[in-house]
Length: 454
RNA sequence: GGAGGGAUGGCAGAGUGGACGAUUGCGACGGUCUUGAAAACCGUAGUAGGCAACAGCUUACCGAGGGUUCGAAUCCCUCUCCCUCCGCCA
Image (cartoon, helix red, strand yellow):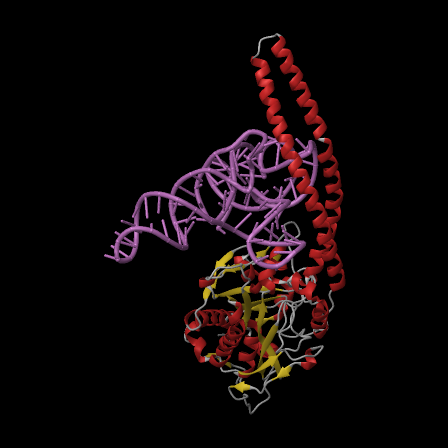
């Protein structure tokens, strides 16, 4: 969510920023509703103030009336009682009369309130549809064709004296990926990992988590895999990406598309201490995506499934530090690639390709020799205060003053299926076996090579 | 799934229609005292919005949303969450 003050003060600049993303947002409607909202507020608050003060007067009248009534009760019949009775009646009539004015004010307030509710509802909904603004360092361009690809680095490109096979053939031949049974169980874009395949993935998860815990200083989180729709809204997934989310038919629960969604909301509605920052979290979760947008794309193999596993890093940081931390996060993801012996390249996403919630994003792509593709294994982003605003997460500055929004960053560390692909395809041998990267062997009972039947 | 009880400021916990944005205690912060600290004493304190923007004024907020009323923390309705007991269960 953007700061409404920013839209109010620099609407044309905001529009230009959104145009850079090749996106659209109802800025004019927001401005109109925001203006009207403030007009109504002034009217309605003045009315409320009037009503409050008259109500207080009535309260005093009622108090006096009660006193007199009590006094009347204690007084024996006679001239004194008659006089009191007259006083009581007069006061009662006065109170009744005094109610007229505030009652009318109340009716007016109700009319304004109705319009206010309508305007605010629309305003808030529209604000949720406005994407984050990209950072000035992001290359400008309407789509992914304008991304900047950096020179490949890391390990040298693997060389073979035979034709390297794609992972779907390797996996099937070794009987470690079972596509047919995956489809039998759940339909297209699902697969079963078997034997050393399943173990390889589990080893990778352990290896990645341990690396981030022990070398990069993260705290491990195990979040719920299903969360409320509000939580999706907080991360910026809703309302825009509703079609891509799996949801429960009866409860207001949705299956994570990424751990980022849950991690963003860990501190929802909380006020942190500045001294607590940065908060560094890492979580392993499965991720579920309908992939409606990519129907017919990447249908072979395990590159794009409806369910996949991912280790995700997430940080809440001081706003002044977030771009520094973005580079750290990039390094953490890179470390995993290096340890696994990958050849990889960094991509600076162009304004038109940066995700809805993000101000700046780097991708890491890993070379996979069998399918001959660069595979996106990590996305490293700074959301600045966009997600913190949506999720109402603030921090109290040590030196006092107004509460501030922290910046949030997320980075895959890494996405499992594509890492599996790279390992299988790059480490394959002429006989179809696969060499297990050294760092994973301790997690696989010392297994060095995945051979048929292992 | 059944029955009952709850939700109030950082925490604990009063408040059942009018002076309550809210008693009190603890904690926090500032000060006095002290060589320093503790104790004691004094004082300050929530969040969000609007207007003016220098101090100022104002509205809303007692789990959430509606309603009754001149007026709601307090009464009514709906929802969410928590606790206790029973049932079921990894």
